[in-house]
Image (tube, rainbow, N blue to C red; front, side, top):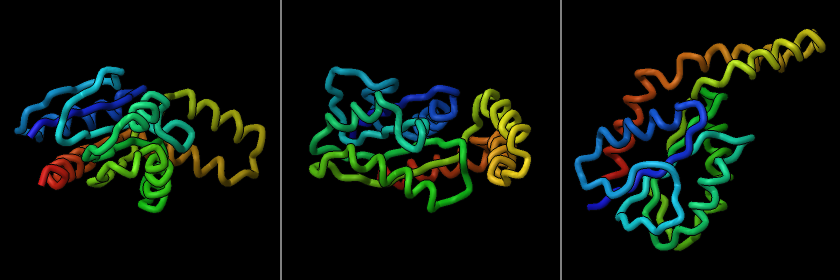
Length: 166
């Protein structure tokens, strides 16, 4: 079996998941890296992205749109975490870019730390809007995300990878 791992990562969270997936694969890895324009011949495509305003990154979207008759296992990271419902919503957006001829083997999301600029923005917004409880929730989520992906997240990724290869 030939496996390709294609990912887009800004802060390193999604890259860490991709490397964890790679470490679990005993089959031949024919490609590991960022999306490319050349065709990649594989039996299974692990495709991952950071979350860009509730969606996948543009380079992953463009890559997904080109795939036909492939087996896809999708993974992603998002600054907001802890909610399967939220992750399902994110993946439902990604699925719109996957042609119906493809087989989706599964999807997995985990929380990832965000750049410090987010915290600075939240603090500024809280100062300007001290009664906005949603901003306090966002700031708390930023703090919670600082430790992710953590060891438990990476174990989940390892188990998910094995499941996708069955």
